Image 1 (cartoon, rainbow, N blue to C red):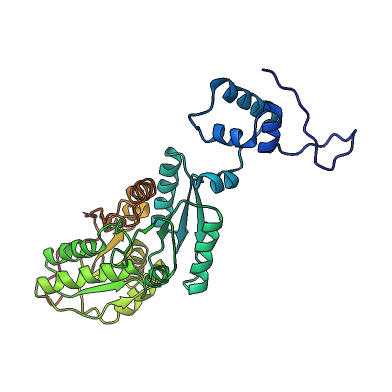
Image 2 (image 1 turned 180 degrees about the vertical axis):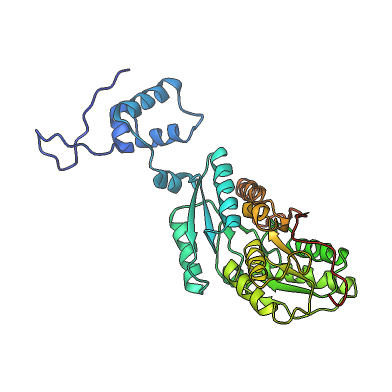
Amino acid sequence: MNVHIKVRRVNETPGEDRSRMASIRDVARVAEVSYQTVSRVLNGHPSIRPATKQRVLDAMEALRYRPNQAARALVTSRSSTLGVILGSRGEYGPTSSLAALEDSAREQGYWVNSAYLRDTQPETIRAAVEHLRRQSVEGIIVHAPQVRVFDVLAELDVDIPYLGLHSAERGIAELADDQVLGGRLATEHLIGLGHVEIVHVAGPQDWIEAESRMRGYLQALLDADQPTRAPILGDWTADFGYRAALELSHRLDFTAVFAANDAMAIGLMHGFRDEGIDVPHRVSVVGFDDIPLAAHSCPPLSTVHQQFASLGRRAVTELLRMIRTDVVAPVASSIEPTLVVRESTAQAPHRGI
């Protein structure tokens, strides 16, 4: 069946050559069926006769009809869209996880809409959830490592599947790399090299990752019966690491530093170098994340490697499992990190050096 039709605007007068997007009712009129029948064709209903289905498809092609995703979502409760709440952006880790997450979602027929939190105020978090709900997302992935975000989410009535990448303790799947284990690996590496006085430059308060890596550091020291000292609270930036190195160089009552991320570790090495302190022969430095720059810093940085891309893919797989099985509770899971040893760590110097 060949269909030829020119679609005019509702209020278009004869002679005007303006057109509008075809609707489902236009398709129904041209195919000479009800709009409910067109809807059944769109949703693959098995009761439609082949001849009827073909008439509808021909009409859609002639009208260049494209189904409205939001309208279909109202009928089917399936928008083929996932939501992501982001607590940070621009850094290598979140960017890598998000890219892998989006690729994985597209491979399974889903699009991704994101909402970035400019702060962690309850109204900001609530607005992000509402924004994604208005997009008819089928589920939400929370890529926000701040404790406050999960506290607020726990109080909201989110009636679609959602999971986070950082906190099983708040009822959300632990898909994140085992941050505590990573902190232990970094600290145990330094202990194994003979270091006794080890400083920890931590991430900011309220960050789940910072707290977990600090716990790993403290556990490793306690297990080795080594002295502990109060961590220095940083802000994840290389600038902070640089300033911390300048301050630490005035006392030098330590032989190693475990920084909670690579940016601060690289800033530390820069600051020590400017103060004439040799890394690693006077002070060893180990980071966390294994960003691409870590292998090319001066010296190349020993660090804890995280599988950011794997994290994003597994998040999509788990959320879709929850959506397709109508299971609200996610399955706790982890991805163990590994230690990458490079040239920024060495045997502890002899006492008195």
